[in-house]
Length: 224
Image (cartoon, rainbow, N blue to C red):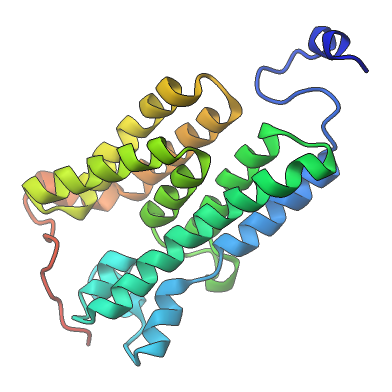
């Protein structure tokens, strides 16, 4: 099918005609499984720390692992969670063309790896909030997009020292950054979906922020 014929036949704004649905599903499944790898649990095991789901916010993420007092474990968790987000996007960008797929496969992989972290197969679908993985995904989609989101998080964290508030503001702005840098493409749809889910996952934090009970970055809560 020619390009013009494909354009006329296609009524979908984000996904072009001729997409192999089964191959796209394969990309999604592989990205989801990668996202399900629980680096908070792995780093806690390596450094002989308690299960991060048993103390602090009970969230298997870098911020909560930091509450154990072991900064190296938190850094490893952060790098692992962000790295798997970046890797999923990178692999999709590298191999999608070989399967006759385009940007739609990258967007699907980006969203799937994020969902894998938030609803991990290996932790009975009870995962982290997805901040680090989202940053990794954004860096993979577009370096400037990721850096803008990361800079937003760092600026808010520096001023107010609330990890949750930093994540929320970055999540609100990320789709706008994506529109400015990528336009109304499939990747922007994926970024918007991730942002909405990330905000939804921070519901308890929003309540605590409004009540003045949210813990600040660096506050140590000793594991039980």
